[in-house]
Image (cartoon, rainbow over all chains, first blue to last red; front, side):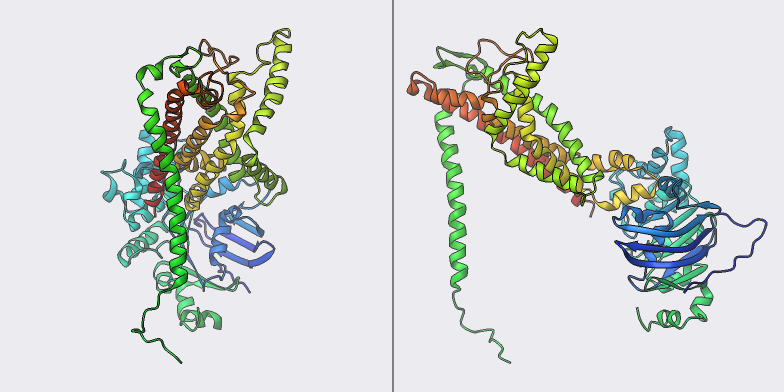
Amino acid sequence: MSTTVATSPSLDAPTGNLTVNDLSVYYGGKKALGPVNMNIPGKQVTALIGPSGCGKSTFLRSLNRMNELIPGCRVEGSVKLDDEPVYGPAVDAVAVRRRIGMVFQKSNPFPKSIFDNVAYGLRIGGMNGRSELGGRVETALRHAALWDEVKDRLDESALGLSGGQQQRLCIARALAVEPDVILMDEPASALDPIATAHIEELIHELAQRYTVVIVTHNMQQAARVSHHTAFFYMGDLIEFDRTPVIFTKPSQSKTEDYITGRFG
Amino acid sequence: MNRPALRAARRPRLGDAALWLATGLATLLVLAVLVVILVDVIRHGTPRLTLGFLTQAPKDGMMAGGIFPAIFGTVALVLLMTLAALPAGVATAIYLHEYADPTALPTRLVRIAVNNLAGVPSIVFGLFGLGFFVQFAGGTIDKLFFGGEKFYGQPALVWAALTMAILTLPVVIVATEEALSAVPSDVRMASAALGATKFQTITRVVLPQAVPGILTGGILAVSRGAGEVAPLLFTGAAYFLPKLPHTLHDQFMQLGYHVYVLATQSPDVDATRPLLYATVLVLLALTFALNASAVFVRSRMRKRIASRA
């Protein structure tokens, strides 16, 4: 079963829309997800919720083709970023990932300096001048609400930062290449409440410039940060609607059972 | 249900005691052997170990003088060997670990081949070196470039080094693969998610983190190569040479082979014995130093990876 949100077309329609059509994902011949149909609206936050193993992370990873790095993974159907296909013989997965960035559950900074971490994506894209890089690194760190905490120690190892700072550094690193979409896979699940609050605040602000898709186990978090919420169960998209609707009057009984804590 | 009383009489556990005794004794035995070797070699080797011994050539039919040509030959051999084995081994490991499909038949065959290469007796490598490098490769070079005159078609430093490189290749490959596996997959994912190609991820993220492990493999290969003699017997080691090798197609003296020569070919075994001990001591010191540095590098790498957790 699948549902879509009607997004009213307008002249200044935000870019960064993701259109998912009949997307199915298989691991070694075994179906893990789908088929899913979904229109993820641009410049808004979309939360993916559901019990463990429901396919929400698999879905997230299929949006920027990260699941191709998992051996035995196969994808059917289509994903479009605005009008451009994400899958297809002529599409370069590397280019896709420059437009659709990702932040992981466990912060994973490189064992390099703070500066080099944020500059990584720019450098592999061919940018070299320290001043040019410096400007972009500063902007990214500011957008990730980390600049004031690290501006005096950009050359120190990123591994010396606290867990919450490391996760914001990973967000800054993803922002530095100026993608259209940021995918987040439970970005705050390993953080304490204060660091989590920081990240949630940040997600709100990011939605002004980016499309954000976030997987979370925490339903309060989904309710707090997202504009739209998708509920996945056993590899299917059960319901997708505006967040207040999902949390107050869901149309599917499974959704209601889940958000009221009857299972999961 | 019968619950054992906490204060029940403690019975001696026979199995425990026996195993403790057996494993302890075995450990002691191993240690004892090592200590006996070391004490014997150090006690008999030190008196003859002078600066002159390290810097002079052998004299008077090996019964006087030093072992400098053998040290020089060993170092030259090991350097050339590393130059050949390290790039080939590291490249093979990168291919096997990063690119090859681990379930494909050719990959599994290469892995089996690498493991078996490690098990081939070293004398077989020597014969292979003689047949392939000295006679075939060297002979061909002579035919093509030197009008059949013998330059490369005879035992030589370069052939011995290449033979040794093949012998130590598995060490380098296995160590490099372990180093690559030790790089956490989350930083690979992070790199890929930023739009890095596989090549960029390998060169900018994976290899820098794997360098200590790769160096460990290199050093282990060197220490293995420094101690091997059999592969050199037919490929380039000489009994005695009046001068140091100065081209790749010269023969050379080598510490391990020199030990063999001193022990078996001397006209007066008693007169040579102090020299023999001192030579063994130098060889052992060299090998131990190389192993120790490998352990040091590896522990530093472990610390670096542990600090990420």
